[in-house]
Length: 94
Length: 94
Image (cartoon, rainbow over the protein chains, first blue to last red):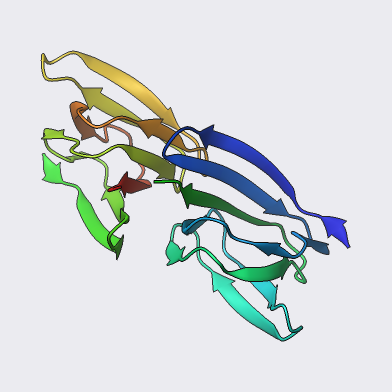
């Protein structure tokens, strides 16, 4: 699979904000979240989530509709659609 | 002026995420930020910022381009354009 691209927008003592862009056919690669985080979708779309055991699920993204997750989440995130997925990941350091 | 509308999307021990929507001709009203915060514009636009002393400035918003501010900022935020301004305010509690 193609690799997702990322760009850090903010990185200070309290927060790191990363823009993730998943072109069609790309994936973040399997990763574990080390911090609690908020996701803010920039465009609508559908992510495919692959859990460590291989189970696959779909998650709908709506532009500007945020959600929160605790540290420890493990997954791969894929774009199996025909349009770019773009979201901001806001990691909470404090 | 019209009042901006707001909707809390997330509110927990660490973070509060509020969606702000400023219709043309609306304003947040003068306020002081009690927490450090990140702004994520959901759509592009131009805000008019009014400082406590009355000085006015313009700030450009680009969808998905975030910025960080420290607690203590005081201002009123106006929409003097013809299209809605929409952004998320992510307040950092920790």
